[in-house]
Every structure is written in structure tokens, then in C-alpha cells.
Length: 212
Image (cartoon, rainbow, N blue to C red):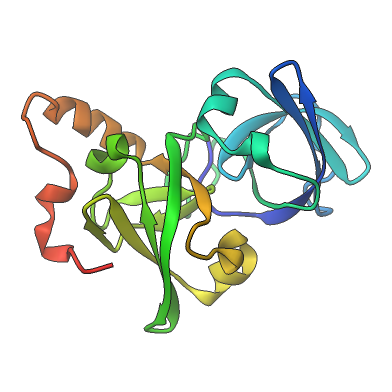
């Protein structure tokens, strides 16, 4: 379990195809170097297990459903990634509870400055739309965010300078594909409402919609 508060960014040192999966070797900063094999680390919001640690690099294997649901297979040497260690019992949750299980891939459709922040519009897969609600939580490449507004298949978030500088958001532009994890509570609410045709979380909060 994670909180969506990115500790650092790292860089892909190597990406090696292995039997339908991929081994990612990530160069990490000093505060994350030396994590023991078996430790969990969220890489762009995807919970991965450290399989090897050497110097300032950590190695991970991604296979099966992880390859199907994420963009990890497309990462190449030099790509930057968001990193967060798993929570310990008693750790503060400054974002929201994030499982590290990516629900789908979204696409950045807009970027605009305003109100001291940078606003991003992100389009989501149709099946995730019912789980996105204004003022609700969502993780984008592992970053815990509050949904500002929802319109159709897109939602908007505002990114403050601190987050813009400390995560991958600084390099996002329209067309960028990103990992999405919806709030775990939203999944249960959607299931509870699933018998009511056309009901979604966003429809319960119409007063906070805005154009994207």
C-alpha cells in the first residue's frame, strides 16, 4: 500500500525483454538505494518487487497482468519514473491510500496555466469513468491527486509548482499516456450502484463540473 506522495524520480538504466515480460533496472537516488530484495516500490504507480539491488540501481520484473495493464513494457533507457516506497503501519498518509494496482491507461489531453498552478485534462478509458468524481481521489503515474472537475471521459487536476518540479508532471504534454488508479472506495461504490443503469460517481456531484 502507498500514499501517492512521490519520494523521488529515478531513471531507467536498462529494460530487458524476458519471456513475455520485462526486467527494469532503475537508477535511484541515495535515499532509495540499497532496498533489500523483496521490498515493494511503486514505479509510476505500479507496485513492483525489488529482485536485485546493486549500488544505486534496483531491478524489477514485470510480467502477466502488469504488462497488460501498464506502460512498463514501453519504457526505455533514460526514461524518468516516479518512485515511492510502500507504507509501514503507522506511517502518515499525506495523499490517499493507493494500492499500486494500475486500473488503466489515460491520455493527457490539455495543459494550461492558471491560478498559480498548471491544469491538466486527462482522458480515461470508458470503463473507469464511473469511478472518477469531482473532489474524489485519483493516482496519476502514482501521484495522489484531487479531481477538480469531470466532463465526459475527461477529468481535470491542478498541479502546484512543488509537484510539478518533483514528479513527471513537469514533462507532460497533450498526447502523453499515463497510468491511472482510481480510489479503491470508488470501486466498491460503483459495484453497489451497478444495478442502477447510467449511475456514476461523477453524476452525484454536478455542481463542480467545468469545461476542460
